[in-house]
Amino acid sequence: MDEQLNRLDSHPDALRIRSKKLEGGVATLIVDGSGMRNDERKAMETRLREAAGTIPGVSEVRIAMTAARKGAAPMIAIGSGKGGVGKSTITANLAVALARMGKKVGLIDADIYGPSQPTLLGAPQRPEAKDKQLIPVDTAFGVKLLSVGQLVPAGQALAWRGPMAAGALAQLTDGDWGDVDLILVDLPPGTGDVQLSLVQKAKPVGAVIVSTPQDLALIDATRAIDLFARTDVPVIGIIENMAGYICPHCGEESDPFGSGGAEASAARLGVPFLGRLPLSASLRKASDAGRPPAAEDGPAGETFVALAKALLDALERNPS
Ligand code: ADP
Image (cartoon, rainbow, N blue to C red; front, top):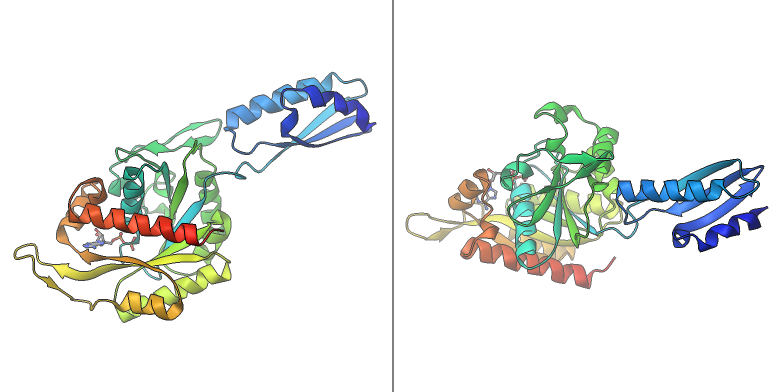
């Protein structure tokens, strides 16, 4: 009889019990483990198993723990139609800018083709694991990081297909993120099956698309918009990168790839335009050296803070 299990109503973990059933001596409990660390969940499971096991008529206890991600920090995916447009660079710097603005930020590097976040954020160390749960690496910039590059040796990731990549992503999303406010997810460039699987797995609340001003890149960017539309993820904005070139010698600005293409495209497609970033040799050098310019004062730092503000504003206007 189920009533016997009502004794559990006074248990300290009672609020976590979603349902309970007693059948043929087998007590089945469905327990909500959301927002808890692996070890806390295990401890709760042990407590409930012991408590239920002492109830007369119970010969076996089965406990099903529900998904841990419910109530976790919202994820924002950063995608691009093709590689080399600066998606990873912008993701790293957006995360750093958000952290400078006082947000608790996590970053998941799911770019299986070229996981560069450990380099960009100067954090090559491997994450530790506790109870099979990865503990994100603390970078020097207030951003917590987990990267597919930390899971496998360089180069091996190239052969991954959708389900494998999604499996790896699950390890990263299920990491011990603590109380982060939001998590940016650096997707692999492109709009194929792998990206589709990852977006379906991550279920981001919104997506940001990075594009260069070139027409070709914009056609690809349109494909990226399509990918998110197919997965019901709202595109919260487009960022135009390498828009204009600032000469390191004379400071003169020129437009090697044209400029404004992404903004015009965004308007045409009805997607918010978050801002643009010029081509800059110092940005590339600082990025290669693991010193994200967003961490420093100066024009690049200000640009990234403005982009991060635009992102938060767009997110507020576009609640999921
Ligand atoms: P993606 O993630 O789209 O493949 P990356 O972020 O890895 O692109 O950037 C590709 C290369 O371009 C890197 O060497 C990076 O430093 C450089 N890069 C990105 N954005 C800029 C920029 N605005 N100015 C100069 N170099 C840039």
